[in-house]
Image 1 (cartoon, rainbow, N blue to C red):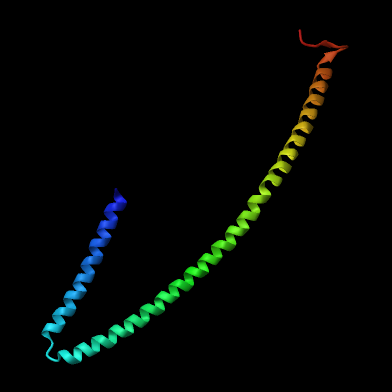
Image 2 (image 1 turned 120 degrees about the vertical axis):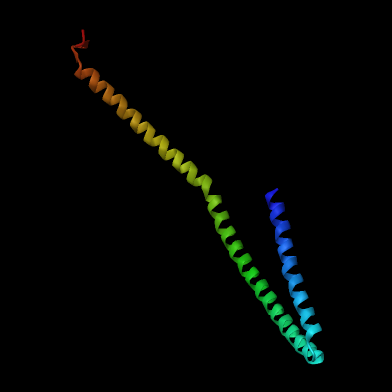
Length: 127
């Protein structure tokens, strides 16, 4: 709901600005005494603006292509790393299992040492 309101507000403000500009140009035309000179000047400025907009559009297209290529490069790199994940995961699991077996063996050895330490001739020292 908030996004819809923001879109409506953005459209309102854009319309207000464009309408204000059109109104200012119209008022300037109506109040000017040398309308022909003004029209020519506005025509020149309009052509200049269109050329700049074309350049801006081309720049935007070029930047978009650069971004697209960069994203594609990163996507390829990520894809390669993702393909390696199962191999790395299996190796990690094997390493953890090996470590667990080593720890388990150490625990059993420690239990036997404690049992031997706290017993005399196989009998518990605790009463």
